[in-house]
View (tube, rainbow, N blue to C red):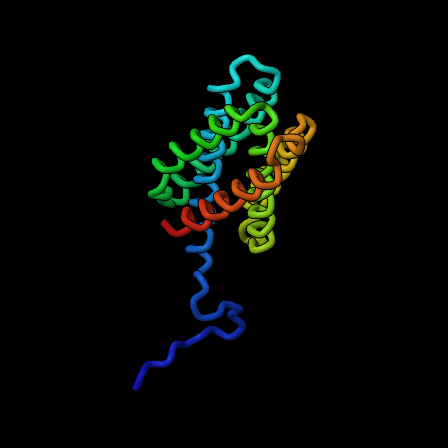
Amino acid sequence: MAKRLKRRTGDPRLPGDLAPERLIARMIRVDQAGEYGAVQIYKGQLAVLGGRKAAAPVRAMAEAEAEHLQTFDKLLARRQVRPTALQPLWRIAGFALGAGTALLGERAAMACTVAVEEVIEQHYARQIAALGEEEAELKATLKKFRKDEIAHGDEARRHDAESAPGYRVLSAAIKRGSRLAIWLSERV
């Protein structure tokens, strides 16, 4: 006869749900990967944009993403969470996405920022909603970073992101790729 699994009374988890410590590790892993990818995207954009008008706001956004990455690098170490095994892929893919959109023009580079930041902002919102008070420090960090991501998207919109040729198609493709990267980085 099969053994029955004991459930704690009041445990809201369903079969297959991650234990809280595994869920937190997954969050930190994917967030570090996302910030790493964002840094690579901006590096690619800056490599192409050089001294153009759009380089200044891209550089400022890149600096903010580098600070986010440093925070998640520290969290990985402090909480003994392994980074995603896909980091070498995100280095190449992020740089290529940044450089590729910048080669399409300044507005396309900004469109890339809007698309990525919208996905990340929504991702952070879901994580914030899932965290309890026992993770108040992580929750506060995610709230601050979410606010920064919203500001980056707004800045990119002010630089005519939505006027980029093929904006809707480009945005949809980047969003799909970003969601896939999140899903993979959580698991691999």
